[in-house]
Amino acid sequence: MADELNKKSQETKSSNALASKDKKDFIFAVGKRRESRARVRLYEDIKKYPAGEEKVKKGDMFVNGKKIVEYFSSKVSQAVYNEPFRITNTAEKYVISIKASGGGNAGQLGAVVHGISRALSSMDPKNRAILKKAGFLTRDARTRQRRKVGMGGKSRRKRQSPKR
Image (cartoon, rainbow, N blue to C red):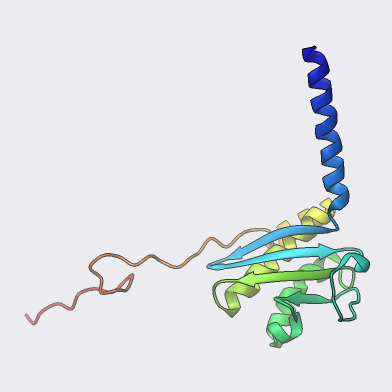
């Protein structure tokens, strides 16, 4: 009887795993940089992307509902977020949706690049070695320094010394 229960539980587990894999229409990854987080969804099939009224084509990227060109408008930013696609030869292959939160513009850009790189590496195992060598899969651990007690609200401020 115990053997029958084990077999049934294993069958249901394997069928649940297959069902959840079939339901997922995208690759999900999270990128982090300082206080910023970027949740990245990589869609291979355009039809599965929930576009709404906009026309979407392969190669489009959206950050918080805006096109990525509008969100990160500088030329330097565009070169930075396109770099993972350039080195893996996957430009114009996917539709990407990103939700970025926390931090500032530079931190969010770093988080977006980290998230895109993680998604590309989970999409194809060949990409992992390429992205790892370029340093895109390494999370930059530098964060804001905490404030210390007795420092006047700043992390490195010292008390002013009296006249000698």
